[in-house]
Length: 238
Length: 238
Image (spheres, rainbow over the protein chains, first blue to last red):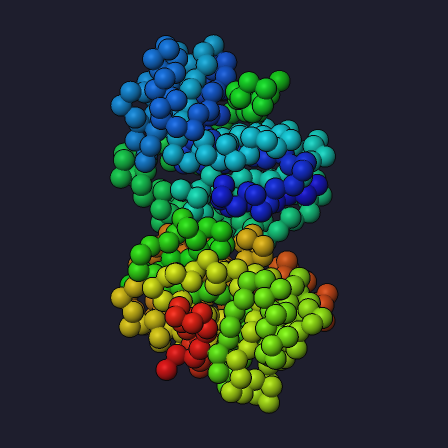
């Protein structure tokens, strides 16, 4: 089983292979929030790349989550906090969703063999799902405006450790080694490790410390979100 | 003094700012080799992006260094080993030079305010040179076919430590934090730390273990190579 990590959406063209299972991660917060939506019973997520598309869906009566630069967009029902998507709000509904970095990563990866959404909250379920694939597995870090970040790379290291404990894993490239080293250093206390990171500071400045804690808590949900190419929607794997 | 690290040439558009002092590094081996050329008295380096250009220079009588995929190109005088460029060979001459990754990084950065070439061999001289700049300093890692690598990122961490010891340094982004953590882990014995890396393995497979050792030895030269936009040549700073 080959595992690689692509540290920025803009680099995926240089990492891409024909048979990839791609795991999009945007730890703070889009991928964690998508896991929460499906865990709380959303029928599907409709990821859209730009604000105008999201606004058009809103006008048609859809439930819309939209965030730019860490803040909820005015016209939207919800922002990018996992706590916005309560069971009462999302159960049985389709959620239109656009965020600064997360939806861009999905856009880059949408033509791969399989596209999954990963976060610390579903890391165990995700690992079990991946144990049976014959594809190469690639963690695609959403990053920050195509720049690399600590938290997404760190998730790659955590996932590598978990997968290696249950299967023979071949390291695809140096990016995996870098992520493993970060995780070795961080795993005793990830929130403390990430306190200095760019995005953690940004979340604190926006009063989202609770979000950050939730986003770093492992195995709180058991859902594996899968992107369906046919209708461009994300649903829980069944 | 702001320091950032761009981990791949393909990401520089997302890191670029107007007043950057860019330090191109390709530790294994192009940037180390360029430092060796100028240290041994080469009048200038003419970096070229493609093989056909290099061959055309060769036909005109130039001294040409050309490498692709870790091997010297047949038509060239030298490859990408620093040991190819002895004083007897290069003193007073211009050297045309093309490599798999290094020249691509120079191409990406050639319009910046200042473009320097860095390696462990000139890290001390480079740090002293940078102490007086008012520009933001960005380490541009050449990587491997636009994928990130351990050794160039590691150099970023070593440079950050050295610069921080002599000046107040503001960290530009998470890439610097990642590089610093790698360097903390590696600095007791960089060759041992890098033994598992992709490119170290590639060098060993091509019989270039001596090159690798040289490329990781700090402060063996005192030259700072500077790219001159006017004639597209690299010369020692004076």
